[in-house]
Length: 464
Image (cartoon, rainbow, N blue to C red; front, side, top):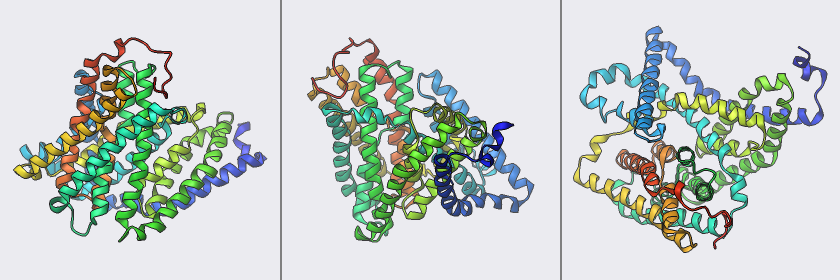
């Protein structure tokens, strides 16, 4: 028990300063988080039967996600693909079609907001991990090749998305949403890559340590960093009445990002370094990190953007080379993986499949999928080939960055919740996400990149 009195005996000034910085962030964030999260307490207003129903709903969703993940793994797909499909099928897409009484009994309408809140907390943790896992060391070493590839994988889909959004605005733009945020959101959504899912796919193919795998991760990481910055602009514009009205929101977000990366980042680094040496700090480190992520999320929500941006910034502030931070990341990831099917189920509940039965909606969905694949996979392949990679390597990079996965669902769900897109376009984006994610693994296997001849003499970031 000697170490339990660490703070009472007097910690070094630098440690105390780090703790003060972190506690200040948590205090400010909790002021805004507690009222939102506290809504879960209203479950008790319906008595024990409502609480039991809530727990049963969570158990059914998690079990369905596990089964879906197991089926996907058997089909040589990432488990997350099966979890996505299982969650969506619990909604109107399947269960609501064939057993509406069962669906309404398991997932009554008054429970959906509470399930959505738990799903939001899971997404906050997921996006936090996304920021923490972003390969900053690869981005620092990005050269001309990675820059060119990232520009191609973001710029071409963005441009194609802008054109597509302009064409769809007359029919699919919700009332009250400006043309600029709608078109920008479509373009930005087309440029997203699912970095976490890509990491898993490359790991399964033993490609993470190869030149082409490292190049793919660096390209996806660089491109996604740009896409998230664009998304901030889109959301800030959508929340204001005009682009000028979004300036205060953008300024507050920039200020928060600066404080996070300049002040909070060294504080977290020092705190976690001390936690590795001190039992008292180590025991509370997981709670501190999670509370920091949630606090950052709700601070950006209060600023006027979305919770995902704050969680992402806190993730970026996490130290990459700290063993305690790495262990915490694995612990958080295991917990997130358990409850992540809730997010997919909430998407399933929001998915109005009937909207895609009209020939016009089906045509729009097909056009969206084709545009997404051609602009992302095709453009990246051509740019990679221009940097003098082989056609097989170029196609492999195109396939890698074409994977949308969970990250795309997070982005389009934010667009739906903010009212930037409507249910019909949301359903089309979900379909596009499933198609582009499912095709990644099989195409990489067919390309046999792990059989490619090594080219260790060519640096990742430079064209030859």
